[in-house]
Image (cartoon, rainbow, N blue to C red):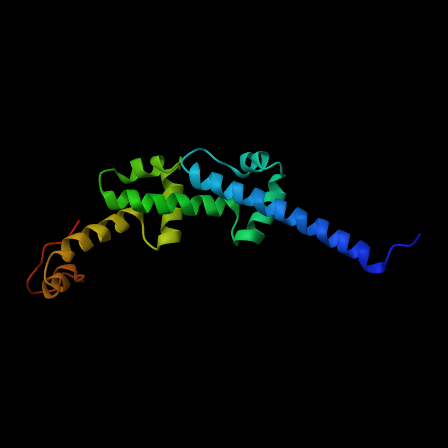
Length: 161
């Protein structure tokens, strides 16, 4: 008995699509776990074990689905949370580093600078300045926040921390 030519292709295509959908569901669970547990010690091997995948396969599939590696996604989540904590202004940069799950202040600062474009301390200072200047007239805010190069002459406005 012969099988029609399109039947095998359809069955293979259907099962491949079903497998792809199962893989996407597993990747979504991995991403959701990262979003929930960003402050916990997570690594690609642990995430892969939880998804019943190899670390290499998880990394390749995650990058294909979301455009970045699981580690990069985790660090992005941690930095986003760190930005919120730095805006609150009640924790030191070191405390923020450990609160978001980073174990190295140097790595945290480097990654923060790469993603945000400034160091955590500079980010906090900019947030403080924005808070202070939001309450004053714009003409005064412009003068207060103006950078002073080479000890320019004239009126010295107080520098914001």
